[in-house]
Length: 186
Image (cartoon, rainbow, N blue to C red; front, side, top):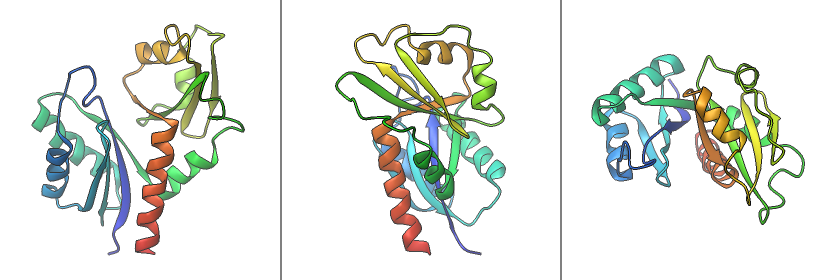
């Protein structure tokens, strides 16, 4: 069976002094789960790896249970394949990310079964400093850098623990790393 390249976005590690784990240790945990070509990217819980498991539910459960045991805390992840991260990149709204001096750009990824539309139905507050764009499985948020408090992000984090956020630059870099891997296995 051919290996599949995956990206795990781990929610809630190395944030606010909680669930601290060094990337070398995280990489070792993934290697011990018998994943190959394991690579971490920055400290925010991004792990690229290959494995021949096609069932993402089984894969996610294995990773979540292993990390939860190791960190003694409930850990949730989003798992993406190359076509899914490519869809995220292709779905970036026009001009999103163009005014980096005045705005912050984030991509919100959803843990199933939560969807962008499902989350949006829970948010009552509308902020004039934010622009939100709905993707197929993501939300793209443009926030005014001068007023980050009172942003949609704050409201979203209040109503859902089933998301993980990456800034636009990180999301693009993760796509590039996945693209490199995809080319190697094709």
